Length: 416
Image 1 (cartoon, rainbow, N blue to C red):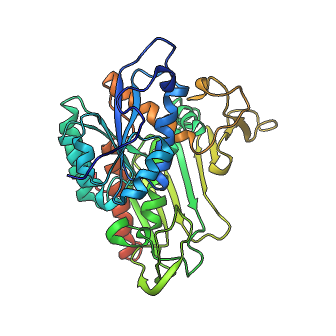
Image 2 (image 1 turned 90 degrees about the horizontal axis):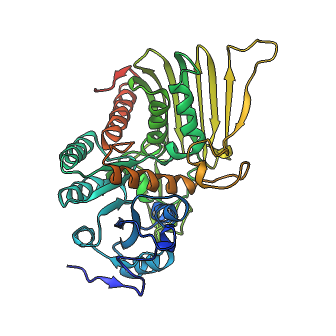
């Protein structure tokens, strides 16, 4: 058993003020244990730390323990982000009595093992996207989640862009029939951090750790968003993928986030895609197009979505994430057109707890909303969204994309 390191922070109580509860009122506490502490770990920490300070929660999250293999680094991360304890073995974290929720922020090759073990140990689970590195792993995780659900546990996958208020509001408009029957869905996710051919070979560029490249890293997000917004699944794809830089310098040390660290000696093979482009058909017959790349020079985090229906259209740009463009095609042509909706009103999703209208939110708030929604699902015993079954559905689309690309873009059905 790895030695547990405790800080001076309380591990199992905290204060009502810290959790956002009214003075003198204490909601039940649930301890959170997080595995992984880098880019996503920092984002998830922000979510857990902030949710109870903003929203009136039925249960109170307590940052009980964070886990990583490097004892010094994980202790530093615990101190920086407010975790009470540090572990160096995820099995020890799962075994802790003060941990009721296990949050998985590790590379995809460890998602299945950690999630299944946590569910079998009676814990609730939040797992970062993509759910797994293969359909088989995702199926095993979903089966474990279904067994755990019968025992009152919940399991959710972290597709945080669903929690952008403009995206949640867009889904509401589609569900209300404001677009009518869908005709087209277009989604792109463009980044540029791999344009430099001398960017070091990190785990995200190795299939054994990441599963796939831009397809799993970015494509998973846009497949989930398309299915979420449309309210229906992708049923078939025709795809192309490409790896533009086939070898990269071995890293001297692990880079921070998406920034390049120093290159070491020698080079290693890139075993994932740099870009994926595919067309698709939805269950209703609507057509869709997807593009995911980490080699689009000048594009930092450019996720865009457009839906066209018989009655109207919606468009969204992540780099303007407080805005939604909406066109009502039932209005007279002489005065109709796309209009900008500033999604900051208290009637918009999640906005009742934030700032006055016009005061914008940012990327980190999606993780606050994610924590809020999971805690409500646990407290009310409802099924969380997106569930592991939703994550499996995305994984099956990604698998069909890879199969189609291997067969020279032949149309490939997505397994139901």
